[in-house]
Image 1 (tube, rainbow, N blue to C red):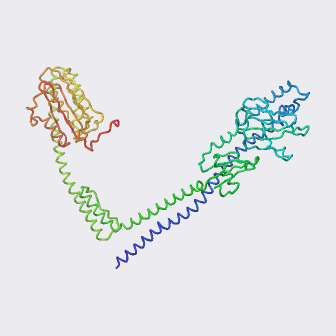
Image 2: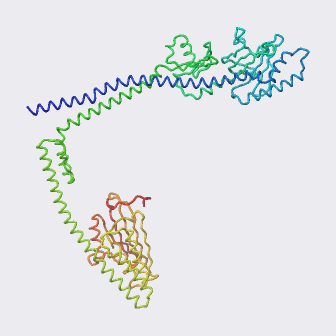
Length: 591
């Protein structure tokens, strides 16, 4: 009953923990995110739209201000006023063509200076005299820096002129329209400013000045914006007339809906230009506006789902305490069965007394087994090392005997210098052979062979030549010390001693790949000496060759040693050693 009571209490605690960690946070997180994301993103998006409209509005107002400054130029430059005044005398006795041409020249010079530093979209301006006797207007073309005359009917401004008399004192902003007086046979879309020109002396209105700007200004200004198909920015005149839109078809629909029923136009932010009264509308569909909010809510749901999965994982982790001690014991036993005697059952896990005793006894048994195996293994290794050292020691007296015979011969023939050089080389050789290490690298072995062959060449002079070739990737490979030297010695003894022929000894070490075996080190000692009949070769009678065979077997059981020879031809000694994990070679380019 006590165990059952504890179990029920534990289940209740786990269920309570699951509700606190998963269900409650999920509900709270989702509810709060719906409110916070909706409010915050709505405010941020509206602020972003207002900032865009404000920036565009300031740019448009700056451009209109630039046009308005040009309409004030007649009051700043007498050369322009002279042309407007003298144009009224055309057809009268006081009119002189030479005077007119001079006034035109001065007018063109002033106009060129005025437009030189203005926006490239400004095309020029038109002066329309208010005279019943004149139907001529004067067009200054910025591109040509010239003034031309055209018929007043070609410059229709009646629809924009204010009807109240006092309105002539102010500037009138004209929405986009087409004109053809800048380029014949080609109509251009322009926006314009109209301002009456007054004579201060007579206090009469002498004419109308119309400044034109290409509609390309809006295209260049709005081209910097990246908007979706469901979003548009529309510019309308003070009376609601359509001027420009980033999406003309959508913009006209939004403008019409905005004027009739704003709720049908989607999310709309507006900005009114102070001077002209023009209005900018930034319209976004409801889906486009709330899409970031929906995406944010999706992220919130994913986060809530993640929290739920984490809670489930915690629940499973806690419930696993019932079965984990048993799984721990079975897993440790399986590892020990596979040969991993370092495996130990975890005694820190929460468990009852029975499992705890089983775990402790299992660890003790594996530890005792591991210690026993290590003792047996070390005994075998010590025996093999003793055999290895004994076999290696056999090479030293044999080599020393042959070398000292060479020294005696040099001394008898009086070659003191050669004898001194030989003793130096012998010193280096003894330094190598007297090392206590049973193994060496191929690089050190080849260095030793170079000293040894140099010593032999002092004796045999031109009769002996040799070459050593060591693959860069095999330099660090380990082999038994003095493994190759007996083969080189045999090549010299059997190839040169007792004959007058020339002999060449070649020693090579390279990396090869054998199918089914893998990467191997290939060692070759070859000479072009007298050769021998391989059938008569008895390894048991050759201390050096038997030593090589036995040491190779101790060093690597899968290595092999082979001799090929032909009488009167050549002798080749070949050793293949399988590449072990402990003798891993560097990859090409790493040495």
